[in-house]
Amino acid sequence: MSHFFASRFSRIIARLLIIAVYFSKPIHSEEVMPPSRSEVPLKNKWNVEALYQEPAHWNQELLSIRGKDESPRWPELKMFKGKLGDPKAMNEFLERYLSLDRKLAKLATYAHLRVDEDLGNDEFKTNYGLISAINHDFRMETSWLEPEILALSDKEIRRLMSEPMLKPYQFHFERILRARPHTLSADKEELLALSGKALDASYKAFAALSNADMVFKPAVDSQGNEYPLSNGSYGSLIQSPDRNLRKTAVLHLHQGFGAHINTLCELLQGQTQNHLFGAKSRNFSDCVTAALFGNQINPNVVYQLIATVKKNRHLMEEYLSLRKQVLGVDELHVYDLSSPLVPEADVKISYADACKTVIDSVAPLGKTYQSALAKGLLEDRWVDPFENMKKRSGAYSSGCYDSMPYILMNFHDTVTDTMTLAHEAGHSMHSYLSRKNQSYLYSHYPIFVAEVASTFNEQLLMDELMRNAKTKREKAYLINDMIDRIRGTIFRQTMFAEFELKIHQMAEQGQPLTPSALNKMYAELMREYYGPELVVDKEVEWEWSRIPHFYYDFYVYQYATGVSAAMALHAQVTKSEGARDKYLKFLSSGGSKYPLDLLKEAGVDMTTSAPIEAAMQRFEFLLEELKKNLE
Ligand SMILES: [Zn+2]
Image (cartoon, rainbow, N blue to C red; front, side, top):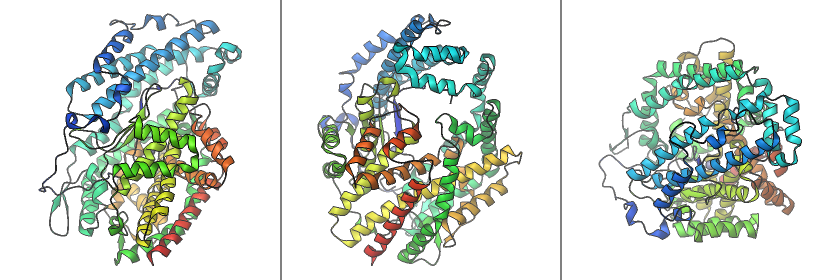
């Protein structure tokens, strides 16, 4: 909440939820080596030259804006300190500040794209380190900005807001005024800022323990082949049709966490206390209110989400009994939740065909949207589609105000990868339209709405794939894929949100978090959200201890609300042109309003349960379709 002029630094929308796309290989298998970066033809690389024709140009630009080597680096900004009560000075300062911020973002975008395309390139790594350090200096050297604005009286801020030359900054000033009751005196703010690094320790220790220090027994398939198990390989292993492989992946991973359960519990407790400290010191009634304040979201949005999903849990129970029946297992365990129900229908799809299908799928958004996306994918080279040696894994959409909305992928000819392309293309078109229609200051859309455009396009792709599917089995495969996505985003993330709410309430009431209390709470939630069909193994009771999102301060609920909003909007937009225009306006609005206002204008009111109900109806419809196509 303290980042009113939050970094508009290059941003990555990582796909935190969708699982790695290609299958892990056994420890001793022969791997086909991907090409080195220099062997990748230009047409298969993203268009970084559009940012800087060559690395030397990046260096030149860096030299021109890096400022002095001593402090202050940028005296032309520092000279405004103490003068911002004057409208002319405020205007000039903001222009200089935002212009420098924008240039730094462009430099950083180029540096991180180059690092990610080849993590082994030392020159790019050095450049990235350089720009990161300069950006850090920029944040530090301009950190007086907010306290100085807040030191003004409401009347003085109102007077600034009424100045015609400051009109473009009005929404930002409003946000600052709103935060006043939760902003402390300058010396206390400084003290809080100083405590930041120490308070990060719990999360950092959790990340170090779970990503670096922890070792897991390998997963083993039914032939006795061993597969290395890590947080990274887990996602693809649990999708295997081989039940023994899935089972050992789930049990061994959780045993790894279970062996450190006391430490992990203390770390989560430390982080929860950190959130509580922040909420209390800033005069908030509780943790959830504090976490949602910056986006002006009422905690009722979270409570309502939980209530509505739970009200519809019979749909999940129905789906799980169908899954159990199709898999032909006596007992349905957590390791039976992610395998494909119709594995043989996973058709191969080339990257060129994937692009064509994704472009065809967005026809309901109109010709202008469709041709902009086609140009980006087919001509302008937004995408870096294929794996090469030392390229970053996974997929994301990233860029800045002065760049293309780049997409990193590791495409392997699957339907899942095609879905990933549609997802990232959704993010990229949202960025593209927002940048085209908003000033730099408002071009950056808030996280609360970020997953709307991406999952909206997943729905459109699903429609297109269903139209093209030739057999019932193919259709069943696609429908089940979508059902599993909804299970992973809406049901599971809502369960996470409830767990998060409960542990924060315990902290607020002075109750200690203990492993046995958290294991019990987690197992109960699993039973509540999944029903009696699911057997909750004792290892799975430890699952809470491995979820990094519980350290993010009420982050996960946004997946569920985002996907629900997308599904509700998809239902409207595919039926009416008026709804389409409203949705396109939303995509062009960036961060020019509070997230709930942006979504309301698009056509969904997240303060009501209607969008979540609409998503549940869609789930029910898909379930019926799945049954028909499995017959
Ligand atoms: Zn996403």
